Image (cartoon, rainbow, N blue to C red; front, top):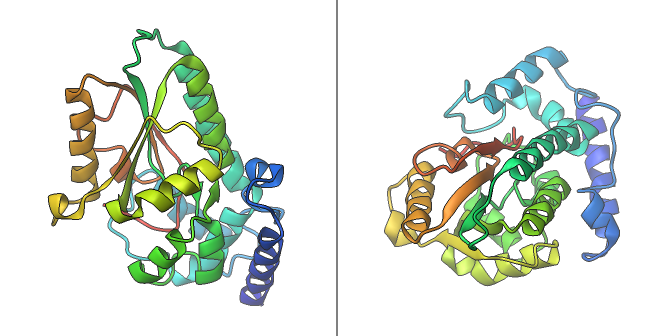
Length: 263
């Protein structure tokens, strides 16, 4: 029964997202139109167990997992499509804005904020609504087919933070695990979503980081930025690998993402 309910909700989500124009105000103010009443609604197991699992993921106490537990797909789906995900994202953005406003900036153009892309500045919820909320192993080919369509939607709270940073004179740098061949589609997708000013977009030049973890890759790229004279005043990402390692900046901000794990 719970699986049927989730299927119906996902079908409604896909139907509504298809009717929203890419540049409409609706897309910029919400990730989706569906609003289940609570994140735990429809969970196929008692809510507490999956809530505890998600807390362990977000606090980095549960690491190295490949997929969402099968029994928690309904919970994760309702969380991502419900209001709690947006509320949690808002709490992160509010704190980041408060921190940014407290900074004494040099105003020399060297203060930057590092943003991840997927599930940080852009949301791939339309993709996961179609392919499932993390219970199937990651399929790079299928996800790449989605990425090249440049249809990922904005994460509204990150856009709000981005706009505040620009007003303060902090330049946004986008550092993503996407590969260099996705530069044009990623640039197009970001700009269509409202991120019109890209100080820099750094993508993974595959051969340079063969065998390296995401943490190592992002640490090295942040180090390169600092060697060029930039000051990383803030760093936002949905994965701990976006925020751990070296040269992480003055302060890091972790966005919720219980759908997948990147080390």
